[in-house]
Length: 631
Image 1 (tube, helix red, strand yellow):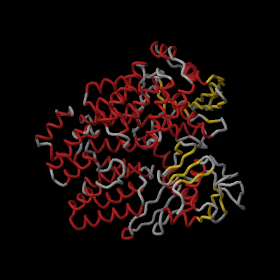
Image 2: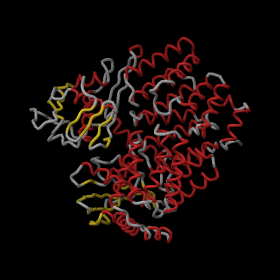
Image 3: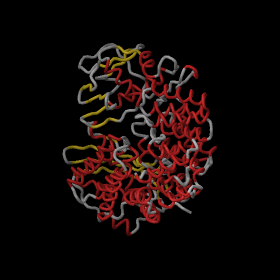
């Protein structure tokens, strides 16, 4: 039996925690590459054939395009290990056979690298033999991404204001020669996006971080990127750190004719990076003829120096926050608190801390009753230090909506956030689903979602949530169409499979629902065999007792430890199941308990179709009044 934690170089591969760490920090790696790495390290020094990998990951009963899938997964492993496939030091390719993991100096021979840029991974999900199917993995996803983005433009899904120029900040290159400094380059990219987004709200729109980071390491020229994102300008940059100094190179490209309209090198002290970002922002404003208001100019001029160590801790917190896992949220809280301990007047660190605390319940870090007061305290401190922080206003709006049910306050804070930074895709996203949708203002909610997608077109969560917004509006065909588009474009985005599965179940299409729910479980990291066994219990329950049998089995599964995100768990989720079963009083009991617990999903009770049968109940009307949604 191999040890639970394997060590090589400065890496730790922890099977118990299901993660790869380097120097104590989590290295982001998707499920299938991580599973393959577990297998390779477990058999270190031995040849592991492609067929062995396929059987271990996908099973014997599923047919996959082995070359495409395995090559892609191995490429992602090498990226995580910062390894050059032409000069491997850990993972060697045995030509025509498979791979050998050798964490030593000796190199097995002969070796051959994979294709430089194989298509992205599309995970194949095994299904029971009774419903056996062929699953082929191909390069189609690569073409789909660009085609889907183009289709969104042609179909009007992107909502962008006429006369507004669009800019993307490409991921800054880390030239420090130290892979551990990636967080610094990524963080500087994100800060630059935020800085530019609030520069001239009426004239400039800036593509959000999620979409911009899709191009990290991509071998695409700016013309292709411009076509895919619909931008007028591209800002490229690189960072080289040495001791307490940083050299930053930036260049601005006009995409219409690929003209380099500005380029400059900056050598600055690490404590001077905020002023540097302001200088770059002012220069770009001049080059593309923006109008900086007196208010924005005053904010730029008033920017305070930041302690270099505090800034570093803040950027590490941003990196952890963007990984969106329970463990990474815990790291982000610690990093932001560390930044504040170093520099107690660091407004951005308080804003980051508040943002993490506000979403901590969704990732199981802590219950709302514990996290939300901490979130409010942090964002209020951030706003006391700098009232111009759009992200802090958006977080405060989220707290007022989901925890305090202060709807006028939530609306006011959302409007302020969007006034300060209309390029904040997250503010549009949460204004849509945390304020407009709960009040049944579905057309407005969809317009806000379209604006969010326009600013962050390659964001799987945003694309998927368009489908949720359609479902709340009872536009079920549109919702299914959207979920299917996202499944084609991002087949390994498990939450979308779960959302499509739930909609299929709500509309009585249980076989398809079970297929999608099974994919969601596997993509969330559940053992495929266990997920398939659960699927079989659902099919048997459905065959024996129809829809009631299905929902009764869903209720039993919801009580288990392993369930995918947004599944029917907790009192709110169980209320939906009881409502589907027609057990109104049990559903109301669960909703009342969810209200007591400050469950964040309580803001959806006015638009959740499963509760239609409860709307005539006095207890339900009381709950609507308590959460401030009674009409």
